[in-house]
Amino acid sequence: MNRRAFVYSSCALVLAAGTIGMVRCSKDDDPDNTGGGNGTNSKLTANLNSELTTVGSSKSQNNVIVVRIATGNEPASFVALTSICTHEHCTVGYQSSQNRFVCPCHGSIYDINGNVLQGPAPSALAKYTVSITDSTLTVS
Image (cartoon, rainbow, N blue to C red):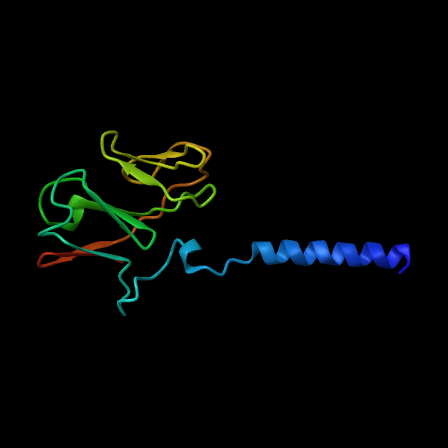
């Protein structure tokens, strides 16, 4: 193999490897994951008789985190956001004592509405719709 063929082959190999590395095949990487296999479009459900019973309590499921922000079983008593950081796609956690979301990877901090308080996150966390029927909370 001559030098030119070797260089072309090497470049093609590096390009192919880089392209494969950029392809995302896992459903867990998708912040808009549409469910837990229950056949509905819900991203998260909670039984309000046994879950999210106190202000500040939270539940995570399918890349969504829901937090009770007020008493009462109305949709306005809850906030539901993606749990995927907008910087490097790490999973954020809710700090009830600080009433904020924190990314453990690079320190991004979001307020209770998902707005960026501290970067490097470039944008807010996506919000989801909360609905309540009887004692079942659904995030879609």
